[in-house]
Length: 224
Image 1 (tube, rainbow, N blue to C red):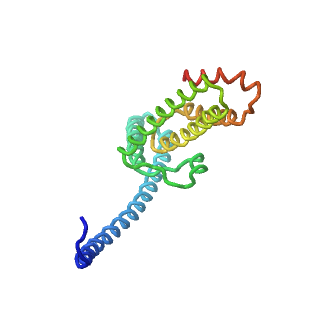
Image 2: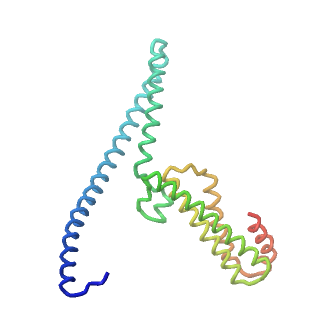
Image 3: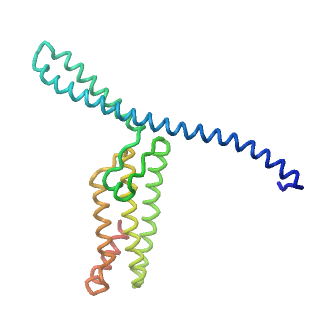
């Protein structure tokens, strides 16, 4: 809605200024809550580490007491309690930020990639699956085109896509791993190796050996 005169503009500005003051208060509250959350996260991490340390000490002591038949029942009960507590601590850790690991630290630095909301974790997992599907379809069509025509630029475009695809997969999977995903180690290793292999293909010179390999390679990509 357009304003009809200058007085309306000033009146609207005064109203907007009043709303801005409320926004400032709200933003300060939000910033304070963020700082409070950060402090609470640090305390939780510290307390979880303390719990784990105390339980490890207790578990070592129970090994000695377990040899005495008179303490066997009590030892078994405590061991069950420790297992339950470990499970509880694991659930708590799911809501806390985790370290990135070496690979993500090298790629992204110390950026916090932890997703604390379960719904957002699920969305990120779904986006990961969608990303794989879309790129697989694109890769399929590029492979078919490269089988039908022999254009070096198309070959390089396809191989560069593979490098980018597998490199992106390794990053996304590392983020999923940080956020509690149970992606198998062999699956991630396969994508790391594929990234390196695609990089080698990208710099493979346009010589006779490449053309001996090219058709089989494109059919392989159509198949997978």
